[in-house]
Amino acid sequence: MVKYYRTSRDTGGSANADVLWVIAIIAAFWLVWYATGGPSRPQATSGPFISPPGAPRAALYSSSGLGPSADTAELDPDSDLVADQNLSPWHGQVRISAGNARYENRPGKEYVEILANYNLSTPVTISGWFLANGKIRRVDNSTALISSATESLTPNGSGNMVPVVLEPGSRAAIITGDLPNRTDWPFQSSFRINKCVGYLMEEFETLNITPSLPYECPRPGDEPGVDSLPDKCYNFVRRLSSCHEPEFKEDRDGVRRVDGRVDDLTRECRLYVQDHFSYNGCLKWHKQDPDFYGNDWRIFLGRRWEMWAENREVITLYDREGKFVDQIEY
Image 1 (tube, rainbow, N blue to C red):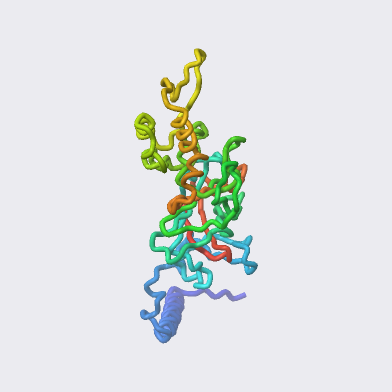
Image 2 (cartoon, rainbow, N blue to C red):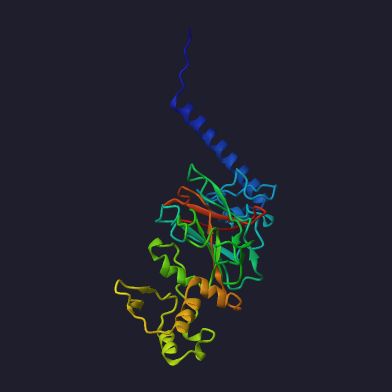
């Protein structure tokens, strides 16, 4: 049998032919690329990736109008993947703040905030909106519905439920847990802040409510009828601190005292003070004031577990149609 061996001369010729073929193929690709736009194509300056690695995926929205679908992922509102029809008309006007979600794990204390910008075009109803935690980064992904709240409070804590409406510059604190577990706590549902709740901050200071209620009330010296009081009673009222309910009691020796001091007030003065300077008394005399209601709401989700993670969390807000309003991550 005859064996043939390739000489070095034969090898060189074959290598030269292979190089020519490679050059021809590259030239052909270059001609096709140049003919289809070449350096003028947007991709020529967009970097090595079609989209940045690790970028959030666009969300899929439910057509039911009941909020985000089960397949909802994190949104990048600036991405071309988010079509205009998936953006809420309130996008850019209502936003989320992380509140204390980064460091609080007790449901009754943990909260995030929904804030209305001062340039809000018109008051917005957020009852029926949804908050969602990070599906991609957490196993216990869940959404939370923002419900209605009590606005017109009565002394026993009941009242008509109304939609939560944010005015320009107002906010709603969304607490993961439930209301304080106290039978004497006057609110039995989510509520709107009013100008009398400072009295509750003094009475229930041991509850350590989070976020804290404003410690502001009508000034005692401005109360209706104060100018008609006798001098001693007038001076007593003028010295009272705002949001303070004087304590009247009788000691073991039968001496009447007010806030620990000997009570030398007349019966009429005592009745005036007790009728005005308490939470219920404040409601009685100020509920019809034009500025009675504040700009803040406290909304309780009633959850028994932490909703927001300490880190690597994504919080997304959707309107009642499941459209994207805002998102933060930390």
